[in-house]
Length: 255
Image 1 (cartoon, rainbow, N blue to C red):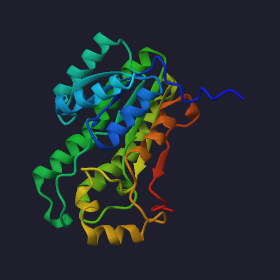
Image 2: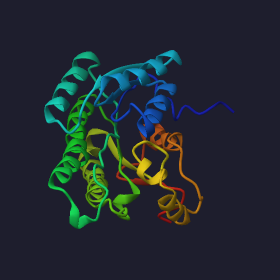
Image 3: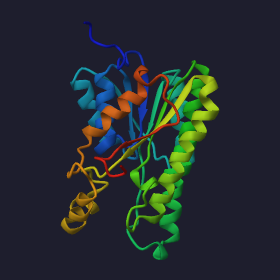
Image 4: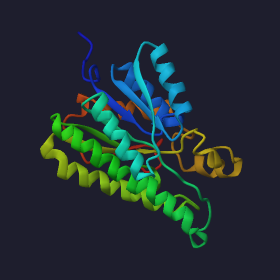
């Protein structure tokens, strides 16, 4: 029996935001291992270049591009560059996100509120719009939004973050319905508690972690690599009839 080609991404151009570390880095490296030319992106070019260099050293193809998705001008500039350099985009992984405040919802700061909305909702939305335009011109593509289990079950002291992630889940359905006619699929990944710098306030706090693990049937925190396989499925032909889905990868938390 020959090996499956369902997960082959040879010739595909993929953009991964928030790819300088954590879940984004793991996704970028796996997509590259499967043959995609990965555009590694985050706010700071140094971290992106480090990951891109590691991909290239491993025999893959990668380009580092800085982009703060909370800044509309940067989104516009980046997609102009992608159009000029590659002429196409096949896969977009919206992974960059922010969660600047850990407090009771009544103590939400307006600045933190606006920053979270600008990145997690507006950023994802217009990254998807720009990617979708390129995909429409080239016969289709796959958009994957990294949401969160907090979009279904709000996280303690993570009010506005949870609200934005719920919006991402609905946004995924909007793009899935309206872009299917262009051959564009849109799905969401809902990670559970994962050992990243982003989640360090939860993972590194023993009392919080103990309570969290009691709610996770698998009784452990995920590694970033454990999120990447689900994204590969959603990015590849293996999921050719899958769109509008929110895929929980949470150790059973939401079950």
